[in-house]
Length: 128
Image (cartoon, rainbow, N blue to C red; front, side):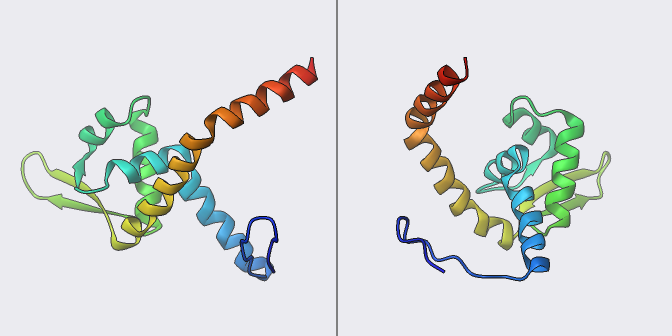
C-alpha cells in the first residue's frame, strides 16, 4: 500500500506482527531510551557517566531504561570483576543500527519545531 502524498510504502501485516512492532516502537520511541541510545553512540559508558550526560533522568529510570534496552538487544552490559565492580554499557550492533533513524527523527524535529509550535498555538487558541 502506498500513500501518494508522502511516497511512503506501507506493508500490510497481521495483528500479532503489528503488536510486536508497536512494542518495539514503544521502546525505541520512549524519551529516555532515545537519550540513552544517543548517549552511547560512539563509545561505552558507565552508569554514572550516562546519568550525568542525560539531564533529568533519575537513577531508577536510567536503571529501568538500560534493562529494557538490554532485554531488547540494543545495549550490552559488561561487568569487570574489580573492587568495586566496573559496569560498562555499550550499544550492540542492533543498537548502533538504530542511531541513524533516531538522528534523522531528531533532525526532522529540529527542522519542523517552528511549524509544530505554530500549529499548537492555532489549535490552543481555537480551544479557548
